[in-house]
Image 1 (spheres, rainbow, N blue to C red):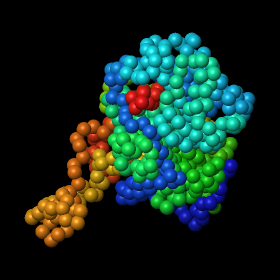
Image 2 (spheres, one colour):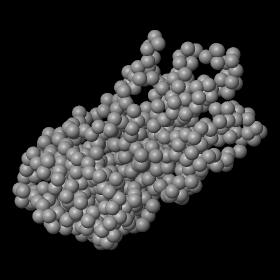
Image 3 (cartoon, rainbow, N blue to C red):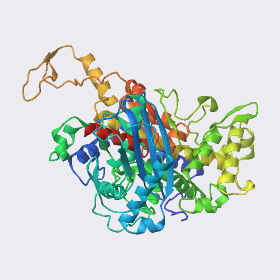
Length: 592
């Protein structure tokens, strides 16, 4: 689709137009705090009731691995055109070995009888085991016989999960429409297929990939409280007290107490858009998407949507009246068509701007946003990631701040001539990327165009990273590992001003609450523990987009303070749908 033309720039100067866009896409710390409070409210609502936008889905996983576990576990990952079978061998020292094979799912299988589809899944597992005989026995502490392999199933379709190893298929998506599947237990359908073929495999766990990400990071780091995906989509799963999940009150799982991993489905945060900083560009994207008014938060921060938001920004400048402000008013097919601008192009633009240059020699970053497609074969962890995930700071010149283009300077030969050689070099690298990726002729893009596009890319991606920090901060607050920075500062001020306090006994349920001599409540929250707070992450944005993690940490500091942010240990939790599923099978055996 072309521009929706919902932008009114008449009678404004070009510089005022740029200022307007900059203002709309810039987030202040106070707004981040406000959004975090709203996020917490939706967490509480979702934990208390079924059917909410932020679903807060109980996973029935009641513990996480610590890296000492050993054994061999299988994973089956079905979510699209291909299915994947994995064997994960846990070494017991926080490392694992992974072997895997992909198998194509034909259209006939997607639309035929469910029994035929699940027989094919079983056949694929059988074929994998034939070519990849198990390297070692299963977990010796399990109650399975030694020749039975436990398997975790990642099933990326809507399911109502009722136990760790049970879930009812609600509907098909992604081109699947297999008959006689909806309303049935997906684990039983798969197990029946294994049993028909007399296979020594038992499906013990039904897995969400975000829960798997948490388990994967927990195994390689010795513990983890949050698994988060920041890639094509976004979601988070965290370890919650069962007592704080009221909607489980009548479920047998609640009687055991303790903790449970909860899949937040936070991509649906604030679907009503009452708090999210919505711009005309966001509204245009949502209105023309396949799911208007759904997954609102995801549309602000995930890789699937950032390129489209940026495309709408660029189109508004191309269509500016009475005079176009970008590309001489020309829109190529890439710019003019819906989803034509991929987020990976934004990443390349920012890499071109920031790449380190020394005496004319450019060192280009050795990673790309979409990765190299290779699968990991050895899972290890060395604890804290020293800088940003996947980045070598020596490759960057540090000049990544928001540079609002100066229209007057960039629009005159004299102004362009006055630019220093470093800025000219950066803009020229960006210009070359745009010529190639946006399919313009070389003479159709100038340095002013390059400056505007780079600025737009930076604004949209920075906003996404700051909002991602809101989600992480909310989980730290929900689990009692942080307080709002504002509350901490107010408590500190109150403590300095209070000269006399008294501890009041249990009166009106206020046991342990400190009061000043005038009877007012004084903030007396317990100090969070000082251990590191381990967060596992996966996804192309957090791995490959320049400085995404650093900006997310900036958001954390503004919400919960620098002391807490420093203790947050962010590390890769690779392959939640494969390795994570196998680890969920491990947890199922632990809980059985």
